[in-house]
Structure formats: C-alpha cells, structure tokens
Image 1 (cartoon, rainbow, N blue to C red):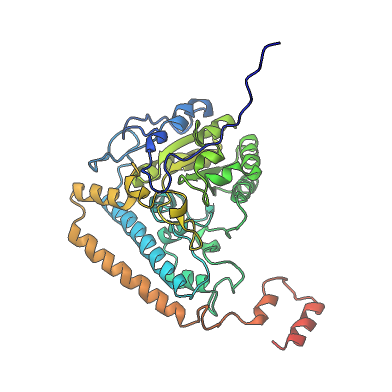
Image 2 (cartoon, rainbow, N blue to C red):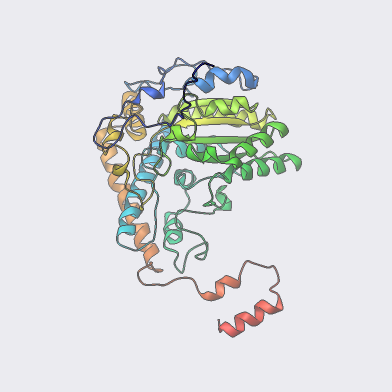
Length: 410
C-alpha cells in the first residue's frame, strides 16, 4: 500500500500586512471601456464574463470611455461630486463628535462614497433600499436633512427614531431607506421579500439590498439568492467588496479565486462586477440592473469593487491587521478625485470651485451639527422621554401598558 500525502487546509491570507506593501494584483482589474454592454434582457448565463471582468468607464486620465458611458450631463455630475464630498465631510465631523463623547459609535464610508451616491440617482421615488451601515450616501443623494441624521446619531430629544436605534442605523421610509439591521446579511432576504410583495401587488417599485463581502458567507445571503432567482424578484442585490470585513480579508469569505459576482450567475441571476470607485460606472450598472427589474426580467447581483479606507468603525484600529498606508496604493484610486478630474477635463469644474464647495459643505455640516446638539448629546443625557417607549407600539394602547405608564409617572 502506497504512502498517501498528508492532507492540509488552505487558509487565505491577505497580500499585505502591517509593515509591508500590499500587492493588489489579485484584483484582476480590466481596462476602462473594454467590457461590452449587453442589452438588459440578456440571459443570466451570458453575464458570466461580466461577473468575472470589471465594468469601468473612467480611465486614468479622467476620460469617459466605452459602451457603459452613461453620458451624464454637467449638472448631474456636479451633484454627484457634491454628494460624495458632503458624505465624506459629514463622516469626518461625526468621527470627531464621537471622540468628543457626544455620540457612542460611528462608521464612515471613506473611499466608498461613489457607490451610494450614484446608485441613488438610478432609483425612483418609492423604490426601497435595504442598506447596511455604510450607505449614508444614499440619504445624502436624496437630500435628507443633515440635522435629522445628526439627531439620530446623538439619540437626543429630537431623534426621529426616539433613541430606539443604534447610531448610523438610520430609518427613513419617505426616502426609501429601510431600517438598518445590525445583524449581518439580513438585508438581502428583506429586500427580496419586499420586491416579491411589490410584484404580488402589481406595483412598479423595485428593491435594492446591500451586503458587505464578509457577510456573503452568511446563510441569509444564499437564501436570498435562491428566492430572488426562483421568483424572479424585481431586486438589485449589491455586494460591496471593500476588501475587508471587520478585520478579515475578503478571501476568507470566498473572494480569493472567484469573484463574488460569480455567485450570482451560479444561482441563476444576472451579475456584474463593477469598479465601485468610478461614479459613471456605478450609475450605468445601476441603471442597467434597475431596467431589468422594472421590466420583469428578474434580479441582478452587482459586486462593487472598492476599498474601506477608514477603520471598520470607531472601535477599530486597522493598522493592527493591514498596512497603514494601503489606501494610497489601491489601484482604483479615490472616487472623489476621479470624478473631479473628469469634470475638470470636461471644463465643468475647477480647483477654485472645488475649494469653495469644500468650505461651503464644511460650514453646512457644522451648522447642522450645532443645531442638532441644541436638542442634546450623549454627554448631557438629554434623551427622549421615557414615555416614548410606549408610543408607536400598538395602534390602541392596551390597558396593562396604560397602567405601567401611569406607574412610571410619564
């Protein structure tokens, strides 16, 4: 009997750790403009090359090239740049507020601003997003009041959610922003179910669900794919591959030898892999997927390739598990810088305008923060009244709760 080779396991490792430069060759980045754009009624099987490639529009010189160029007008592009800048400035201010102990927790979307900003423009009023905790740019693009956002973060007397939700877990039905769940991957089956309900009612509204690369390892993600495929739900399934979960590299979730978008094809869903730092590519791919959903052509899974430039949250120190300067070497660059170059190339923007807008937005965010803090912060303990716990639970308050409220004296 021959001696068998000892068995061994493969444990994925990132290509960069603290103290050494990351090798990003694993990303398999394609040239801008090289990826074909099929009609939106293409068979899911025929999107396999799109799930393995990468849709890109902006080249390294700031030109918009290729069949996916959506040909956006000047005002839309300037609004997109403004939305991304406002999101980044807001994030920075809220991190400072958290360090000042005015709020308990915060999560930034640094480096990922193009995804929500452009995606929101491809949706219509009444469509519902089921976001995770890094899609605040969806609300920015829909111009939700900053004061209300800050009050929710502070859980103060003017908090629209009455202190019932963790910071960054917004809920804004009027803006198509479903209540964020802190449990990973729940957004996908929720979005699929909402989309199925819309179809059952004969409505014309679609859903957009969000998940990070790490959470695709959760069973909820795969269950959602099955339901979306079987019932051809009008939903867009967004996988934000920002390279890192809380502290584990995306390969641990299965992204080492195959794209996350390819999982959609395997589940019978049309799928795209997109440069998530390219505002134009994000908008074009989102419109393509939305068109499929609205025309009863079924779901689309989109993998947005991007990079989490900041910590996972204010409780995280990423320098413990990856190079501190890794973002500066990320080959897809900064989404704000790339759209800025494109606008300047078109003659629709200038450095002076950029600096002026930066100052204007910083003042706008600071003013909103000051207004929100008038209603209380975590430091002064001005939280919603205890009476609010009895509200919005039952249409008609049961007698036993009425008695409890009386006993509480509120």
